[in-house]
Image 1 (tube, helix red, strand yellow):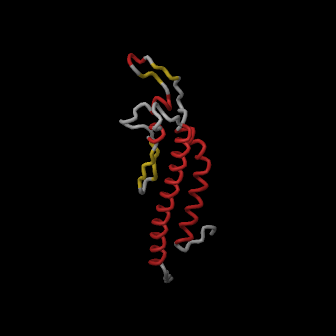
Image 2: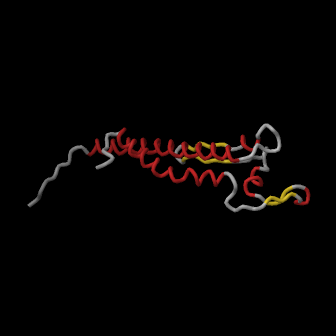
Image 3: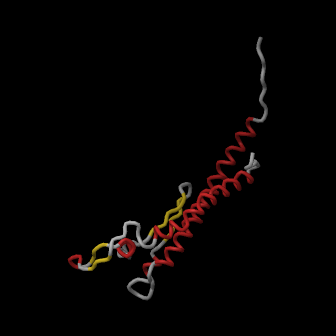
Length: 141
């Protein structure tokens, strides 16, 4: 004896899962970018202006947007190589004559990250719920 089972709606479920995946990726990218922008903004507020009134150390803090992989915050550059020393410390200058106390966790960037980190996961959860709502899924069920 054989039992026949017919399932309706599989193409619709597959389409909704694809849409959910795309919406979730977009929402998570937005979450990462928002968090990175907050970290960058707070880092700029912590870093001193720098050796000149133009505030080059502050302006070297940037957010790199990486679609599909989130975002990253960077500080310093080839043009402003002293920012790493400013944040973490060490010895620089002729014969390493200028000393700044070494702080493993840094003074600015990671401190700003620590202040933003507690809100990142709840924000991501909310953005995933929003992706569910956009695609017709019930985020509570």
